[in-house]
Image (cartoon, rainbow, N blue to C red; front, top):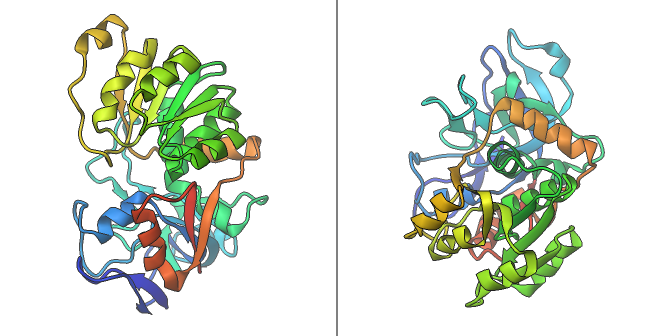
Length: 331
């Protein structure tokens, strides 16, 4: 089969022939129709991710058709259209992942290929109203944003929510989830164009985080926030306690702009704030996320679709963070 392979840290992704996966008990083979990129894939290609091995087939997001099932696997999955949950071996504690936890696409071969093998428990029916590209965009970013907003952030109708960096895949999903839940949503972004697109998706307003007084602008617009969703950290994170309402929750799941800066602890304890880290999500949250998506008929936002052979071009686009929504590969 054809697959996109990362052969070394100093080499671009290449399309090449590799062996088709052999199934074990409980596994299925999915013929990939579309796959989607995540920031994780970019960090792996530049050698800035833990546990990198070569060669590797990257890709955590995928949608396709089950063409083979292994022994002890429910034969009803055969020929079904599915999306793949990339959050594997979470463990028994919903509060945190186990030591065995892993994300599809490293260390196990992922979805940037004609076929991927996964355990049947990680399959979910493809929402019938979505295209292959839209369905492929859902899994990792949708799950991460869902857990951040609802499990950790405890979002409910009427909450004021701030999405920091609204153009990313996770940021756009967090925006869509919050709007569908009846929250009043505000965003930050580095461009006016992305802020306008966020408004088209239901955001009440937004500010450019490159502005010196961005936090003051937000406070003027919203008064304060019950929930802040962030994936960047960096110096700007220090402003979040100032613009939180009493009892507010600051939830983060990435650090693309740096580490945790010095924070004013007095504001945190006096306002009774919570700062919460999160990563991916449980199988139960994945099902709740797909149920929520179908209930509200939400369409994932696709920035651009590339042929599988142009995976390196897709990664290069992600490198400059110019996208709004998901970057997808068409198999």
